[in-house]
Image 1 (cartoon, rainbow, N blue to C red):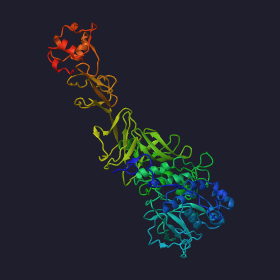
Image 2 (image 1 turned 60 degrees about the horizontal axis):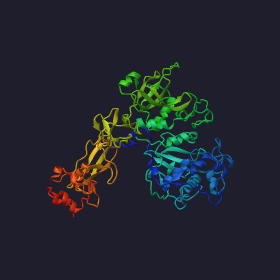
Image 3 (image 1 turned 90 degrees about the vertical axis):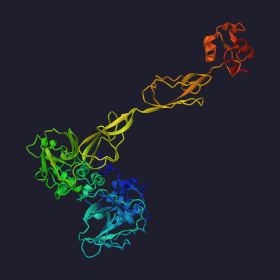
Image 4 (image 1 turned 30 degrees about the vertical axis):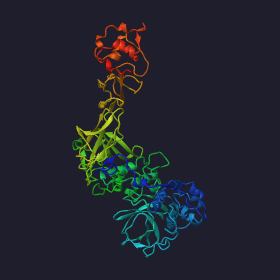
Length: 624
């Protein structure tokens, strides 16, 4: 079944499972000498990143979170450089050694591990503090790499000179079948993230502290960089955006996720300025993508290098998209479809590579970009080295003259199809998603429309359920709406059996109300209140649930007191006496006017006998 964050591919990223863990704010841990951070470090972005860490209570996860908050920190040349921002620092001055005992200038890979542990709330009896980069100093047992099953939070030890003893230590942040992702300090003067082969010769082995991991059993770093990043890039915001990518396992989708994480990246102006946020807004050409493709960031076109970098970070090998810095499908070994021919083949699709030829240049192949969305009239791409020397997401018309055509990588899994949601005058927060043929639809979004009830998504005339199978192709599901239905209830207040309630659509009219009969009473109609209120109107449209109350009037005079009636008033007489046998033959009403004022007391037995004796039914009148 499709999942919103994996197979049922929304255009937004799913939240990492770890975000559901209990969290608490981090309070920097400084005790003894020094009792607080150095002033330089306190003013740095690395201190800000540290206090922003939200601890979960899972030790293995939390130590990695703390360590990642410091990525990009560089050692300095003096105590004034403990802020970590000296781009040429190389004399070992660092905050992590300073935290230990106030002495800042010494090797610091082990000090960094100890510092991270304490900031993460890990006590000394779980991970012993030390300045020495060997497992014995940490009071841990080393497991050789050939016997180890590394896990997140493990300490990893390296033997650079191959003399059998450890020279460097880091933390395992991610594990794959053949690689480990390590976050470590004092690696080429930096705190950095590096990918190592699990079999490389100078990797000594692993050791695991006795962490308590009450909540989290997964992996905190969802993204595994396939290629190592430059240290200046790791110090920038786009590296952190890269680490937030949650790969889905679908190459056509994942290459776009990686590309989107870099939108806004701007090329720099020297080999020391490729973190994506140069000081000058002038157009530059030094990039992490060029650094990765070559040996140094280089001046020149870098759009194709950016596309390849995204592909490799998404785990797409050179067998799928061949490595070449030339934006030409032949060089990249891609099947190529001319623009108009591509449309007949159902392209562009997610993960296709668009090739451009700008009308203002003399080249046939000027740049290429990654398709992140497409519909029947436009294509959206992420493209590097565009106009202002930035990475940008742009939408082009399918008939844009600058589009030469589309390269179609031979992904193991074909690109998903587009599933659109038409709310049909309503509102739906999800405009479209990607879905694979043969999968169940899974959870579908909700839609709302003022004054209506959502009746579900329809493919033509067929209602779509989460268990139905998506058959492929780009399709549109349309919302269907129903007017709300209301219930009209008839309440007789227990005087007689109540009629059945009726259900009506909003805006419709009842047309007629049920008629009732009650012995000895006349039925006056249905009213909005049990007492008082107004008469209910059967021609009035319903706007909500309603209860109407039956109202009756006794047929035989006043039985509750000494009230009189004017028997010369035919309407009153009819109201009280209609139904009595012989009433219609009552002609001499004036004879009943015993007081000359047209009234008699119908509870006065003598008067009743005098004027009504002999009428059929007289004996049954409820008088005393």
